[in-house]
Length: 275
Ligand SMILES: [Fe+2]
Ligand SMILES: [Fe+2]
Image (cartoon, rainbow, N blue to C red):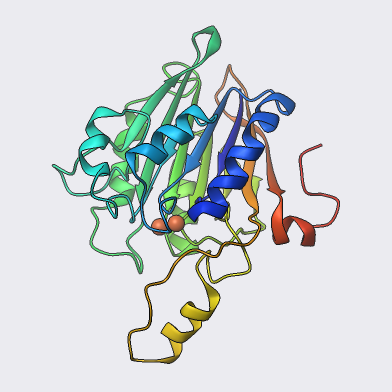
């Protein structure tokens, strides 16, 4: 199974590069499915039902979110109607939407996608370790699911790494999101689970994590509330990881970071896409 996981799409610039590049990437990499974190797609804050549909029509198979999931109120009811968008599993019971989804692929293959959210520097969520443990126990990798991808949405690198080790050998990949900064540690854990601490954002890197840099600076330097912050609108970089999963075992054979377009790709030199 060949998968692409794209990091947090921030605002219009992020949406543009994602929807521009996805058709060619799907063909070039012969992708079976594309997973996109879109918690910042709508002006940096959440996602609307209309944007959700635009992503699904534009080549995404499954959308993950995070702490910003409900920033746009219209999405609240939509979460229960549209199974192709998920939110963190370990939100309190009764929260609209689902923490996981199954994607049916050609040849009857089944891809399971789960999202958990961390607690360190994040807020009062339920235990992500217990939630992930429970979800992994529902599936047998290579038997009831051909692949299992976990989106670990967290601030602390340590918490993400610990969650990945919990899942090692029982998930195909554990992909970190939320910090909007790509880490250089994409590798395959001893048990066969592909891992990266953060896949990075899909947005304009001439910014502070995707948002206007002048407004962000002012907010750090002053107690006086400034203008509402908005996404940076320069040319965006698509940050993703490309994954190859063994259809028989469900374990990872390859994880490769990918950076396309914008300033970050320009700074990455010639090795900016899988060979
Ligand atoms: Fe984000
Ligand atoms: Fe987040």
